[in-house]
Amino acid sequence: MNGAPYGLIAEFDSPADVLHAAEKVRDAGFRRWDVFSPFPVHGLAKVMGLKNSLVGWFALVFGGSAFLGSMLMIWYMNDYNYPILTGGKPMFSPPQALVPSYILLVLAAAVGAFVGMVALNRFPRLYHPLFKHNRFALASRDKFFLVIETSDPKFSETETRALLESAGSTHLELVVE
Image (tube, rainbow, N blue to C red):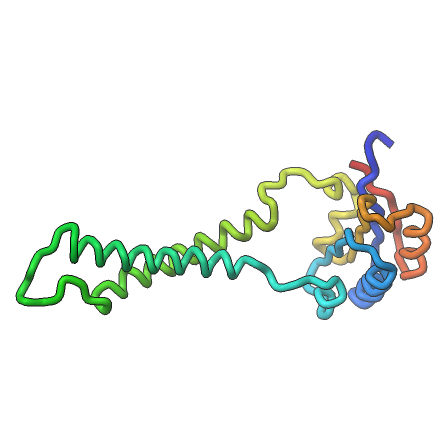
């Protein structure tokens, strides 16, 4: 081994097998583990205990701030900064300011969703130890992988290996950083 061990990777042939293994890993009390699949597996997020994403909150904050900011900017510019009285019309009219504010809301919400996704996924991540693992490329085709990191407090190579073997892993290997 030329580096520190990253984790134990187990390969499975079917979605049912990886779902069963994920239940076993969860019930064993592991906290730092992940599953890699070529397509979404129904029920896996619930087994893994994943919560709703925070990306929507980023979009809400960015979009709401842009909407309120543009409405305030239009109000300030029309009513105080450079008032022009035209035909007895009011200096500020919310329906008149709604269209540009709404357009900025949509644009800022999209930017907020992008920023939130990048921040929460910790991008740009140019390297991951699993990229060196030769069989991991099959995760985008037809295999399912479950990885338990060595940084997990319950990790013990022999016990974790026995757990994954009993879960039905077809190929088991230690991944090194």
